[in-house]
Length: 107
Image (cartoon, rainbow, N blue to C red; front, top):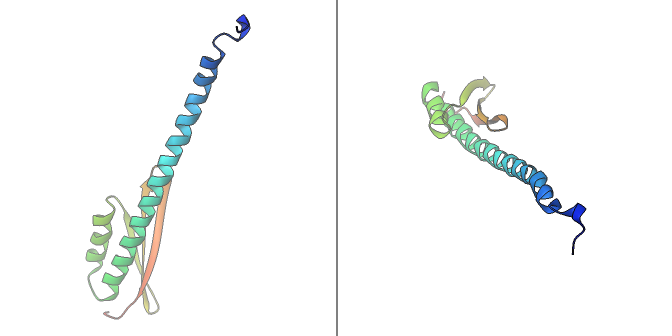
């Protein structure tokens, strides 16, 4: 038999632990979402850099990033013989970004 002073302690411990478990799960989901957004941004930036490097319009390169990651911001720049694209977007844990460059052969 339990002493009367410990009655309900398991319920109280569970009530304290449950929000912590929920917070860990939310942070894990946010980290996974940020990682997935970063991967999509990297792929879109690489595609946009290749498009711009082969002579497509800057608008077409920006559209490629916007199609892959809605709401993404895109910056194109020329660096010597390279065309570089930096794409960024908001995620659950803050902004994430990715950059990619391609050899400018079509300009």
